[in-house]
Length: 446
Image 1 (cartoon, rainbow, N blue to C red):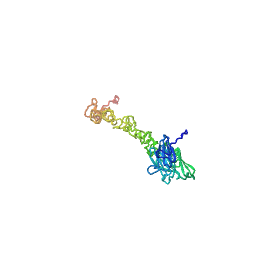
Image 2: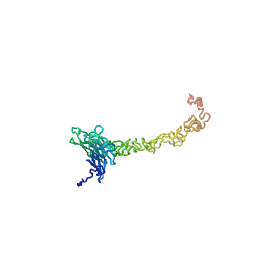
Image 3: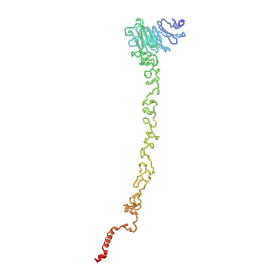
Image 4: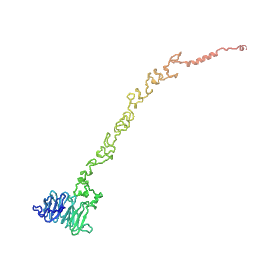
């Protein structure tokens, strides 16, 4: 029936017109492109009717063809991927039919396999992420079947557990937020089941709103539930669905960051350069080894062009090695005598490296060989080891001639005068004693 009220029969009891009839059409669903799906309760089958009117039987009473038959096709629905779900009210099961025609039984009368059985499924619904929900009219319960095949009983005959029971669960629906609604035909009531896929006692929407759970693909389902249900893959096991994970094979990253997937963006030394780009990841002062290597600065304290690590005199700009004189002292030889100034006590005298007797710049020669250097010898060319200088004039006696008139015998000038002096004084005295005394006339007459 069009919006304009035009009515067209799109299928009748003849079904596909090829011998596969339709009897007691009990369920109907429509996909996003206008294809219609109809379940035949008594004909135990289902048909697809395209918008062009092409009719195809998509499942019959043989079910999946491996022994799991379909009896009383009661409910039908489909997911966003085009998979069709058909429930068997008497065969107590549900089948999934892919667009390629592959048929799989996704639940049977054992229900969740934990005691919650399925009996008389009349209605089925599928949410936005491919979870199928089926209500059991005879078992007074409902189940959730994930795309990965995980089956969970979401409500049973106790209803809300507060005295409001569920009897004859004939109808089921799910909204865009994932809330599931189950109607009880005999208990005359309907229940809303707020999704709590991680069973933490808080609605999934609340978990997402308060940040307890992430919903990276914004499908109103916590990411952990998408992963658990198989709706999303998580290749690296980091809890982030691959479709939202920029590094789906790196459990430590969800985005490449600076270093790329598979390499951490750590900055071990805290210098602001990630280890992957830091040639010295443990040295906060360097990002490349430089001349001195990681852990040693490339300083040149004395500014001589040689880094301290290679400079054995880091505070002496004139040297990079101590040499004979050590750091801070030049290895110069100012007088060119082969002895460095630091060891030469006469650094400007090429003939001496110690002052000696005469001092730097003066020779310690001893021309007369008397053991007295010329510079202090009072008679440098005449041997006079006693350095006698009787007249104290600074010239040695050995270098001075005797005074005039004085013999220069072996005793030298003035020799023997000390012996003659007493004799001379005696002679003078005797002569005075022997001299006649002159008398005056008066004395003579008296």
